[in-house]
Length: 77
Image 1: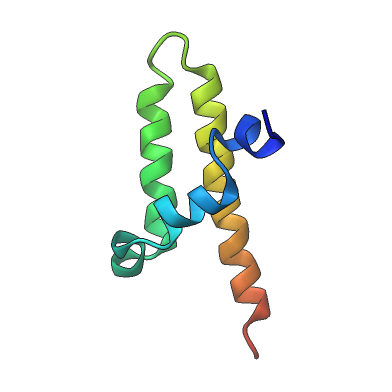
Image 2: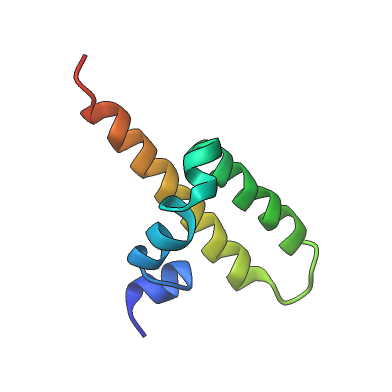
């Protein structure tokens, strides 16, 4: 199993296609996509045996946040 699969439960390319490059992301922004993931994590955390999925979803949210930060620092001043 690849490190990406262990870390996120999917590849980085799948994160981009399923979360970042979607109509929803275009409509509401990546910040709201992250907020939605965090809401899902809240729900998941109440289930037993969900620790691994919670960890992966938090890593996906961090991946997206880091991309947002990268884009903002890459923008010309």
